Length: 131
Image (cartoon, rainbow, N blue to C red):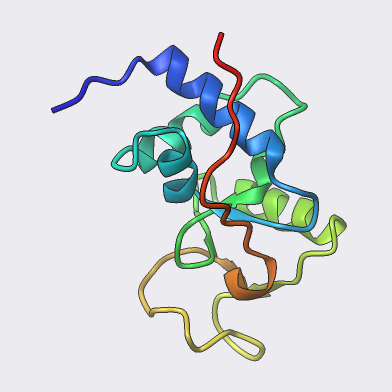
C-alpha cells in the first residue's frame, strides 16, 4: 500500500482545483486521479474541508454521481455550494422532484445535483508544478 504525504497531496488538490474553469465541476475522485492517487478521493474532500485559501474554487468539486455532498451541518454547506455554482452559471437542481436527471443513480446522496455531462471538467491529465 502506498503512503501519501498529506501536505503534498493537499497542495496538488488545491492546484488542480484552481484549474477547473468557472461554470464547470469535477469529482473528488477525478482530482485524486489527476493528483496521482486515484484511491484517495476522501482525502480530496478532507483537503477541501479544511481549506484556508479563498483563491481555491472548492465549490466546483462534487461527487461522482453529480450530487453536492451533505456535510452534516443541516444543509448550510450544500446550500452555499449550490449558490456559488449558480452564480457561475451552473444549473443546480434539487435531488428530488421535477427537473432531476433520472440517469443519476438513486441513493447517491446530496440535496442538490449538477449534470456532469453538461458541466463536467474531466481532462486526462494536467501539468502540475513540481516544487
